[in-house]
Image (cartoon, rainbow, N blue to C red):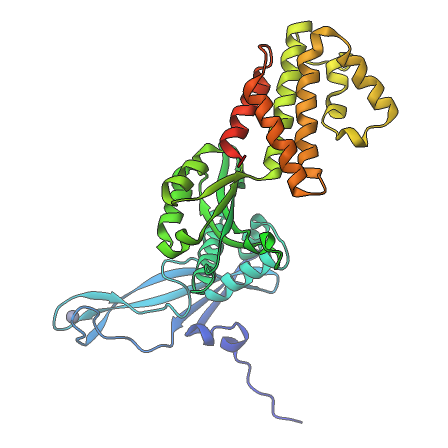
Length: 376
Ligand SMILES: [Zn+2]
């Protein structure tokens, strides 16, 4: 019989590379705990570089990669030393095991990032796998992404066009938590490849974007020519206040969404004015709410008939006019030639600027927003 190698728990649990060794294990029904101590040598006093003697120990808990289908927690016994010459007390350096103040081991961070990027798992699911709170997991992933992104010094070179958008990072009972996502659109503009992620920053305020732009180098800001964004004016002022000579544009998706929203508002207003209550299934303006948001070229004969029936009533004229404007916006982005699209859009914006009669407040406000947000 061959000599079996004695089992080495440290390498099996991937602790050797983290500079830790197992001292004990505690198996609970729903998680396991590995009690560890550092294997790295103790450093000198950080203040005077003098020698120290063992003072006491503190316990640091780190979520680790799960073993045996259970979350695994490392309970690291971290020694503290007292400097003999100056009396200062310091902790044993365990940065090989986890980032400073991190609550996940380095292997757990790698696993979490892999799960979110490759396996598309939700943060809630990853948090459950690791046995940590949602916030702990989210913070660790954001910090790791930051480290990965900011370690490539050339990643911001040659960026001329960026896109800014807000995303819900988490739904909570007390409201949604937002992040601002900044993407490099230069490759799509120059037809050289897909867009790529530049940064994710907390919040969706003017301040969030402004602060990020200010943190970048002057040569980066000088290179940016176009910033595409939704209608949120905070992003626009953050951009023009930080970058000289920049053009801000509203991206097509948001322009169409905004025009559609104005159309809905107009429909709901007329519904109240004509019938005095919110839309019910038998009401003509309610029945065509989806048809109205469909591109004209895609409507069936029956749908056209229902729509024209509504337009026919005089009290619905503002709705018919708003619908026309909404369809022009879609046409502009569907045009085969960008020049053609631009012509349609310019004509629309000019007409919304000059001749909007009263009773069409939604269109007037659409005109204002587009004028502010679009290059014309
Ligand atoms: Zn000292």
